[in-house]
Image (cartoon, rainbow, N blue to C red; front, side):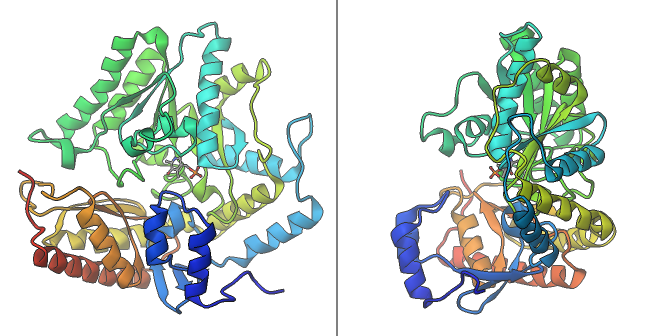
Length: 465
Ligand SMILES: *Cc1c(COP(=O)(O)O)cnc(C)c1O
């Protein structure tokens, strides 16, 4: 049985891709001229392309391949499940073993009374569920005017109309009429770029205070929930100051605002605990999950819901669901992924081996002339590129130009590292070994050196006025 693979020369595949395939978050016209890189297979932390390059995947796909590539157990489970029961829905008073077993396992892993799971096909869908769930919760409780959800600028919560509205990405809001009504965005706790002369601690408190100010300005009786990633991922791996989350928690408790932790990246070991909420000391009412839940081997997401919210929602009919909610194959694969994470003690590997090695390597890059800040928690990290370290200066040229140049140099050195404007971000598979981390560091430094030289040659190392 042949795999669907590179049966044609690279250039022909690229031409077909350009002719028929519209890529997400891409200027497709530009890509068509350049030609997309064709990834043909992967093993462990390495990707292989149609030209035979071996590429170290510093992003675990898109923050998701936590157990690494090529785990045949997941393929076996998927094949077995497809033969036994490839699909059945969970809408009309029916259920099936994979969905039951996965929901039970997630409830066991999740902290506190987060004991209930509403399944979706992705993180975006799960956050759409959350919008409807928190508003419905308050409506059932006799407070239908509590509809406003507070989120943050530069947050990422998905790309559907609902989840894209929750997110705080301006370029997304500019297309297609987003945000939907009653979503409010406060400022992010991004000290390095926005903290000015304040200390990180004071800045964290000031940014958390914006939540209280927003609640008071709108009126407590209008606010349904606050949503945030424990650590912003797609926004640039922004680690909030230590004062931020305790103050946010205090404010949510004080005004009885539902707290939604978007754990799509932070969940399932990324920060060294099962959930980022545990690492950051947060007690949410709802968690959004996806990505690492199945290590990306199948598309699946969901909302983990606390007892009280589940009970209120369950008191009537919740007019919401997806054909693929609790899909049996996706559920079975996710369950197998969780088995591997547990039985192979992957979180211990993260805490005792991988995260300390990654931290040492990453912080070592801090002496590079282009690097203004290194941030890292567990297995997610970022570098702020700057033309002037002492003043935390931005570049005079367009934001993202330096980051893009650096990403191109990473690509040329067979390292996948993403850029968010002028921050470089990493999120490697959790199973990465110390030797692979050393290799990653070598390639990253070489890419930074080449980027520095290029920017210098183009006279682009000028700080913004
Ligand atoms: C990726 C992501 C999402 C969206 O998940 P999709 O599966 O791409 O829909 C939501 N929230 C966060 C924090 C994410 O990183």
